[in-house]
Amino acid sequence: MKIAFIGSHGVGKTTLCFDLASRLKRLDLGVEIVREVARLCPLPINRETTLEAQAWILHTQIAHELAASSQYQAVICDRSVLDNYAYLVHRVGPRPEYHALVGHWMSTYDALFKVPVIQHPSFDGTRDIGSDFQEAIDRTIDRLLEEFAIPIHHLEAGEREGWVDSVLSVMQLPLRPPQIDIFTTAQ
Image (cartoon, rainbow, N blue to C red; front, side, top):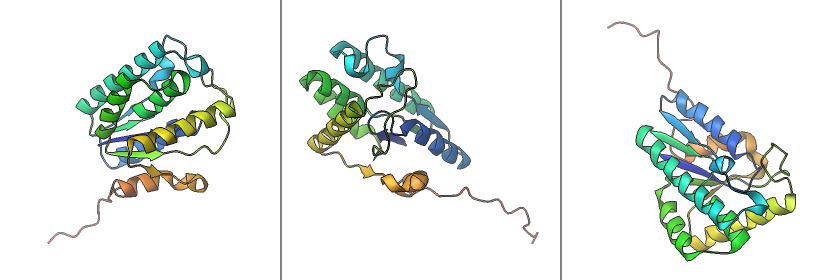
């Protein structure tokens, strides 16, 4: 099972990944989180990103997803390749060679969840804090989702406390771990 959260920076995807991983671990699943690889990129990111930087990010994201999927039952991605492609498209426009790759790779996710912008990004040492940039990336993501005709589940802005339950329900997983009956009577 491979799940990805899609959305602009600073919307709460990382927190959501950890919350979901905790719940899946309680269901006795082996879980790995593919963290936001852009933070590892040795090249410029955010508004100053380049085609080379985004190529590095796209390929690294795919490599991390492949490695995690080969070892764990559940893989939770802090972003999908489409999110990363949105930063490339926003900066340099669509690129046919990456457009095809992203289109293909999006079919490898079992479920995709769009996280809405509900607050301005806060500074964390890496993330761009401009709300205009955050909103522009969110619009680019929405446009690409429509262009690729990708089925997606939208998380509701006013229901943040219930997002993990929504994901578990979509994935047809129990909301609570099964309880062991320690008081069974011998027959």
